[in-house]
Image (cartoon, rainbow, N blue to C red; front, side):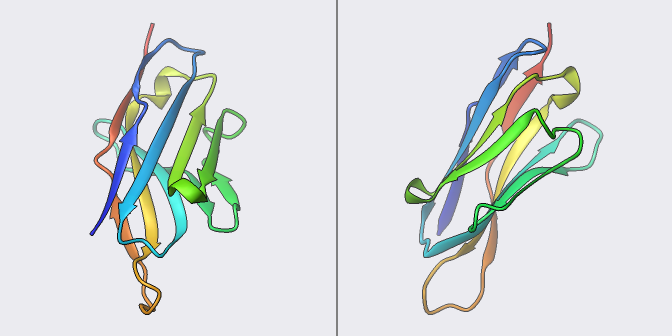
Length: 122
């Protein structure tokens, strides 16, 4: 089995910063991509940022120039550095990993973490 565990959420004032972490564990041969999503009450889940195994990154327009996604392959961990936070960033943030479990398998699987709450308020 594969498990993703997020951490680092909390309450922060507008303009502040947080760093989210997501650690993957279990039967992992390789991680093809890791992504951060968020979901606010009454809204659909949206992609915030992603990073591939080749360290190619992408961001939602709403967070460009404020958020940075990075990856530590040795630790099977992805990070989301969030700066200049706004109240509109308030949401539950979820980590998603596209993971190949075994070398002999040709398929990858999508796994989700449990989510971590980020609240931006004064």
